[in-house]
Image (cartoon, rainbow, N blue to C red; front, side, top):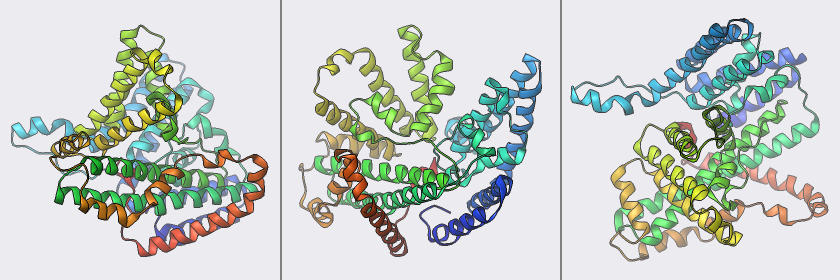
Length: 463
């Protein structure tokens, strides 16, 4: 079940909200959310939901030793089990085939087919944050295993984030309220995210598919290569940020305040800044639980470079068990290392607008690497960006695709920037009723498109 499905929008979410607010007391409300979350996950993963519950019980037992034991050895052993048990499950279902295939193929052996459970990377990271946070601060220990299961499985952010650190919501698990303003703001944020996903991301994704099909039939032109990269940058941004908006909106409806996950990344003036604005919760996780424990930037330059290599190598691998994701992670490692240690002074002299353009172009190349899991196809498309496709810069067949969608991609691109920041606060206040009507129309249009569209993927479900 995805947020942009009719089943979720017309049945699951309204029923859950209704039962939640009818139930008195925080314990009753948590019970509604817990049952809804387990049902939500079981809808798509009827078998692995039991593994999710089993992992939660194991982590709860380990965290009890971490919080209660006075033995440093026992606490460290319990933390090790709490971290490595879910990571081992993640490694097997997501990476075993990728890592072991060369060896197994040499002996004509193969691993049994394993279907990767939805959202396993996201809730595994949340398990890790809980275990580490309790180790660092015993007071965060959750005595009630059902509340811990709710934290790990809460359906708004279960399958695609944002990654919520336990220390950020521990108090909210036990005490929270939802005012009418919270409910209204949450519904508006949800409608905005739904519109991003269904109207902007889906249409951009459909154009991407048509451009790639056109390139396959008529050859890869330079314009076609960059046009595809441009459209995919919009698709993945609106797809993922739209999902995050919906998750944050639903969280607010239920009394949770989730941190922002995107902050207009395409207006970044450098690659480091881009990653402070894109998928913020993932960057926070790697910084707090890997980069800083490795020493961060408070070390020698060679060790600093090594720390960046580890973080970005694992960031790439986190996105998928394929060589293109590893290359994508290392691509950003190289860019960030060059930005910090080689071109830092020179870049400071470049005008801000040019830095934004340069950063966006580099990000577009990164999205091409991210998109193509087939190495040969990836190399062909990278070649097309610099004119090695063997066809004219622009083809008449591609123009038919461009002309079909007219100005839509440019309008979508404009929506990726904080246009409202150009208006004064008093103007925004006067336009608030108009904004409410606009988001209502966006919500209705999104529902109509869901009914009529067959193209409704969600990119980050596969991670």
